[in-house]
Each structure stands twice: as structure tokens, then as C-alpha cells.
Length: 260
Image (spheres, rainbow, N blue to C red):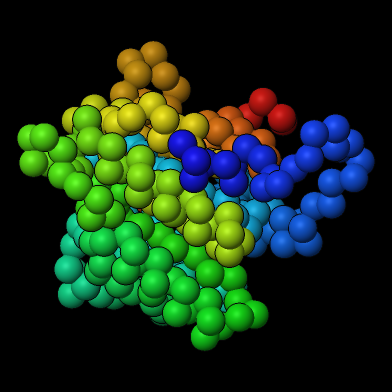
């Protein structure tokens, strides 16, 4: 797909170019910590690289939305601008969860279901805060549409639809062109496994999974596990054992990754 060019190459690259002549933009040398230690640890320890796109999948009820809200609040504490866009719950529900979790730093909210409107909101924040890192957190991917067309069955957001891929392409192009950061909750089936076009897995920079370990012979059976399985900008395989309390998710332990 033409829009994925930003992922794999530099526009206007001439034949015969030597790698020693490629200058990495200063923005890509930065790291943006969320301030949630176990989250930052899972993505390499230093935080996000600007232009990163992350997909989070996992078991229903594990706490993916709680995770996103905690990260959104902590990003604000770190001095960044976070736009939390929800199509899953009303903003009243989000506010009530925020109060229950005792989140006090705040974050920008939206409830756009059309991706162009979401990106317009993000660009508004980017222009208003030119010196701040802009982060979009989307809950969730299947609630977004691009308005291109409905599939033959009339469903523009189903598993067999190309709409989620076009939406991710739009989010990716925005992140790459603005050095923004995007995180979204992806589609899963009833078992918490990824449920969508395989091309989505290749379109994102970071894949993370948040699940409840159900393996009978596992030492962590019954525990919540947050694991990064792909990271273009850092290590992968890192996993944290998380607990759920009145103030949300907290670290209970660490599972060594391949780089440890």
C-alpha cells in the first residue's frame, strides 16, 4: 500500500545511496517516557520513540482500558499532551473510572469515530502546543471508520473489512509525518487473540499483549501478564506480572526477556 512507504523507506531516495549519507532526524533520537515504570520497561526502558505506533491486544476484562487511562494520566504528568479518544464508552463513564482510579493529572478527551476528525483534533493540539509531544490513545480500533466505503455486507468495521487497515495506515502516516505517538487497542476474538488482517501486524512498530495466563503448568497461572512481542525501536519479549487494585494496575513481578 502506498501509504506504508513511510514505514519502509525515505521518500525520494536515489539509487546508489550509501547508508553513511543518511542523517537520522533529531526527533527520532528522542525518547518519551510515559512515567509508568512497568509500561516503559516493557517497551525497552526509555519510553516511546516519536513516530511510534503501538497496538495492544489481549483478554477481555484483563484491564486494557485501565492501562490506557493510567498511561494517559501519567503522560500528562510527564509534560506531554495526550488525546484519549474513546468509542467504547461515554465520556461520563471514562470520568467515573478516572475518579475511581484516583487519576489526578488529566488528559484531553475525544469521542470521534471518524479517523479524519480524530487526526484534525490531534493537529489542533499539535499547533496549540508546538513544543509538546502529542500522543493519541485510541480505545479501540474497531470503533474507528474512515468513511471510504462499506463492504459488500454493509459492515465497514468487521474482521474481513479493509477499514481497520486503512485506519491504521492513516494513524501511521500521521505519526510518521508529525513525529506523534499513537497507541490503540486492537481487535481480539473471544479468546483474547488478535482478530483481523495480518497486514495490521506488520503496519505497527510495537505489538503488546495484556492477558491472563491460563496455562495449566505455568508458574504465573491466573496472573495478568503485559508483554511486548514486537518493537522496531527496541527490545521485545519483556513481560511484567501485574496486579489490579483500587488504584488500577501495579507491578507484581518481572519476567526476563531475551536481552536480559
